[in-house]
Length: 140
Image (cartoon, rainbow, N blue to C red; front, side, top):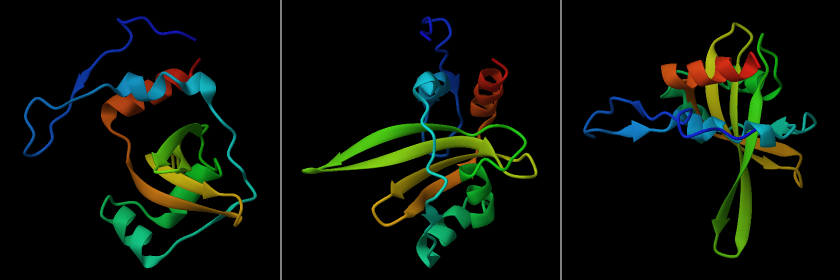
């Protein structure tokens, strides 16, 4: 699927302390045709650090697990991003989905299949523009 320049709209988002901050929401979602299947056999790795971090965004670990395992009423989309750090490469997945109650969540997780784990890097409620793009995509 290829998107035209008209479909890649830039949305204005208000961010404290940053003027005229623009986020291209569709840009995040335009590679959904490259979606990957999450490894359902990996176990979540939670510690005080990542639990406290997502709590700042009003998200609980159980909600992220529901998105990861696609337990919500809508499907979970996942895209693999490659992060290079020196000679090593780490893959992270950007997830868009809903928890069991239908609350829309965007999460970044790092899978570690060698250890049988995945770790939540961050998670937060979807913005209105991301929700719009997400629901538009799942209707197709």
